[in-house]
Length: 440
Image (cartoon, rainbow, N blue to C red; front, side):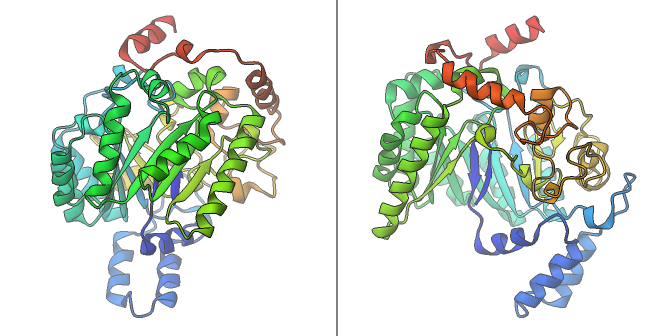
C-alpha cells in the first residue's frame, strides 16, 4: 500500500517489489541490477539498457551527492480539477483553490502522462477536487491504459453512474476508491454539504463491487466520527470492501484551518486503534479478505513521518493548472514550483529548484543535520514545518528533538479542551475561500 493524506493506492506485486528498492540511496542502475538478480528471467539486458537510457542520472545545478540523486517518480497524482460538488472541511486542496489558473486541457494532460511514463511512473491516480466533473475523464483513462499505467480513480462518488463506471472499466480503469464522511447519514451529509451524498455513495459502492472493481473505501476520521469506528467498520464489511482506509485527518489545507474542531484526543485515538485491531484479529481468524488500514495523525507521535518517502523521491503531483509538486500540499510553501506548460517533466523532476530544494541532507539545520535518524525520517514533513513554525527548513515540530515541539504539545492540550461543534467547521467552498482571501 502507498498511503498519502486522504488516499491510498494498492500496488500490484511488481510495483511493490520495485518500490521496496526505492530507498533514497540506490541509483536507478542499482535498482535495475537488484531486480535482475532477483528475477533473472524477467528482465533481459536489452530491457535493462533501454530503461537506463530512459532514466539517466542527470547532473543538476544543485550539487546533490551521488547517494542523494533522485530515482524516477513511480507514482503520478493527476489533480484534474479543484471543482467539487462537496464542501468537506478537511479537504487538502489549497485555501485559495478558486484563484488558481486555467485547468490543463485533455491533450496537455495526456502529454503529462506520456512524459511521466517515460520517466518511469507506473501508477496514476485521478484526483481533484472531484475528477468526475471532467467530461474527458474516460478519454484520459483510455490514454493512461494505452501508456501502460495502473490507474485508480479517487472520488466522492458524486456524479458517478453505473453507465459511466462501466465506460471507465472498458477504457481501462483498474480501480475506484470511494470516500465517505461518516457511517451516519446525517453526519456524512452535514460534512459533505449535500443532503444526497450518503445515499449516492452507498449506491456507487454497491455498483463498484457489482462491476468487478476492487472495493476500496476511504473514511476520513476526526473527532466528530471517530467514536463511531465500530459502525464505520461494520458498514465497510456490509459493503464487502476489500480494503478500507481509516485515515485520520492530516492537517493541511482546510483541515489545518479546522484543526481545533477536527483533531481527536489521545483517548479517542487509542480506543479507535484498539477496536480496529480487534476487528483485524477477528477478520484474520475468519480468513476474511477485508484489510483495515488505520492512518493516525502524527500529532501524538514523538518522531515525524518520513513524508512521501523523502522530498522528490517517488511521488509527483500535477495540479489542475499544471504546477508540478513533490507532494500535493507543497503549493502552500514559499517555493517557486515549475509548471508543465513551461518545462518538461524530466527538467522538473531532476533539475528544477523546487524539486531539489529539500532533497538530500545538506539543506538541514540542526538538530536534523547531526541527527542519527535523518535517513529514516528526512527531517519530517516540510509542509507541516512551515505551517507550524513559519519556516519549511525547520525540523518537523512533531519531533521531540525539535525546538518547536511545544506547538504540538499545545495542540494536544487544545484537543482535550475543544468544544467546537460540527456545524461550526468552515466548509470548503468558494464563498469561504473568498472570505479567507479578503481577510488576509
